[in-house]
Length: 261
Image: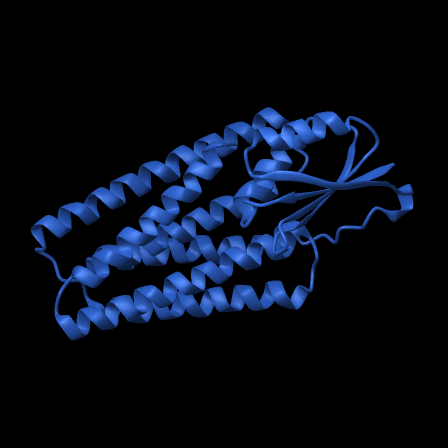
């Protein structure tokens, strides 16, 4: 049994982790994958096929660099705790607020809220992919990822097009109160998710990735709240459109990462 350590310079969110898991899932000699996303490190416990493992990582173009390989005993493989229940809770909260924010965004005529709702959906999709990938065939994983990525990027394109259209017409000023109140509750929900994830003190890869993703969501929620205050102060829809455009671009970037699977 061997443990190979790699540095993955572009691994900073659940999308890259999922890509790596899918890419390596067909190599039967791999016994365990341990991800350390904050430090961009991957440990591969395997029996054979090191060259194939290294080649598959390099084809992802995520900046994979081999660090070292050491021989280990089978009993030294880390026992990864089961965190499926907690991931389901986080997924449920994200999907629930996708529905709430999308409805509120339409009623308030706020592109910031609509974009934030789509970001919540993107998170739910990533968490869902992580859960669905367990025990599934490689082809099934690829099909799920492809459908999710295409759906997400289409929504992002439509949303960004609407932002551009509203910039041209500027006929709607969003309801700043809806923006602030709904985004505040979304921020509280994401903060609660982050609390649950941190409280678990899990070293499991998906949990570490989820913490990073949820932290980013809190930043986006704060951005929408600030945009709502700016709308109140200026009486203009421009702050809402700027925040909405930025979030749609972030969602589109995440969708492209998923499609690279």
